[in-house]
Image 1: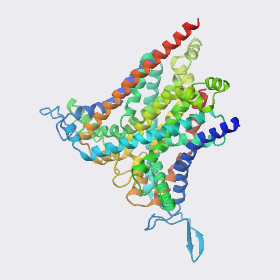
Image 2 (image 1 turned 120 degrees about the horizontal axis):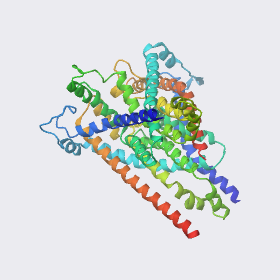
Image 3 (image 1 turned 180 degrees about the vertical axis):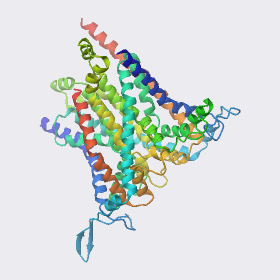
Image 4 (image 1 turned 90 degrees about the vertical axis):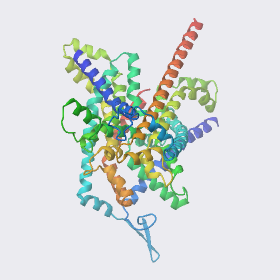
Length: 298
Length: 282
């Protein structure tokens, strides 16, 4: 009896969050998927129903027009590829800056380590939107960076920094850097220095020991950090809208514009499905790394 | 070894400068008199006029109040749901639906926000058609959406805290005949309380800060603070946003400082208690 009620209790404890996420996370994707196969129409809601009735007979209505529209319009294809490029470049920059930072933190004394980690995480607790906004003030034509460079005589005309790819890379690296550093740090911190000492005793040069021992060992951290940056960066909306080019938009902006400006729900849904198709492999990879991290800690 | 350590340390300093220069510049220019924000008006600065402006800006104050209410509600609900999920994943072994739950709690963390926002809005529209609820979009739908993405973060925080403790304490209490609920309240809950507290703070911050998902599920008349800020800064910098940012940075920084000191105090007290207990056993 006690055993039975315990099983029932557990089912309840696990069941409530599962049910919540089923309804508010999984089912919504099915709805997006289904609406991506309908056509836009002037009604509430503004898309064709899945099953229509003509003279008493039900007919299944499946339209691929949203997808064919997306594939034939070069604007969408180019923003899709552009988003991939931006996300990939930003992830690499983030890794190039974040890896040495995480390495230095992991190698510092325990007391400094706590302070350094707090300094890395602190910006994350302040508003993301305001931190991106801060870069407008730094990058614009009469902004801080240009003013300083003009004052120092390095340049004679202000550089066009805002509304460039460069500004988007800066914005993404800046906003996502803690997400790269934290998993890397968690991994690097666990490394056994005896391995490097052994390599040195065997005559390996420091760089070689680093490349053949530290880097391979930290691969899970690299993968987790890179995915934490890459996946959300593909669909990034705020950063390219505030800092990015006006002649080339990213796919997240396409989705948002289709939905809010053109009120074309099927096309917006199709864009969402196409982004998801691209991200399904990285997301599953992330889940595997995450699971191993959380369950290997036991 | 030396050169690599030096290089890494230089990068660390550079990276920290990179992280803090924008925030510092925002704070400095919040005291600037000029409307041009980034051009320092030495004759009339520093000034507090943008702070005064802010206090008289009814739109911003109303939005901030709405954001606070939504963040309080979502963080509290997300903590309950996230703790349940975290306990299930860390303690229940292999149960049916475990993989599903694990997947659904990690995916929202990386999911691009435009997709989450769109899918939630389409759900709310479909629900309204189907069962007549929720009536339109507004504070309720925003809160439901925020709970959903915040609980994923709470789950991970709670789950990793539980993974750091083995089950022997809980098992011992069970062996001594304590009922599961009693075990939870006397043992598990005190153990994970720090994780629940930081999960709540994290959820509050995420909810308070969210723009993209909120834009999808917000209705007319339910503009949160990030939405108001976004519509202001979309077309350039405005000085009162700098003042607002400074206030928010100050609140966060002092909050973190207080919680760090408090955590250290607790940790020291715990160590002292352990030492006392060990001494008493001798």
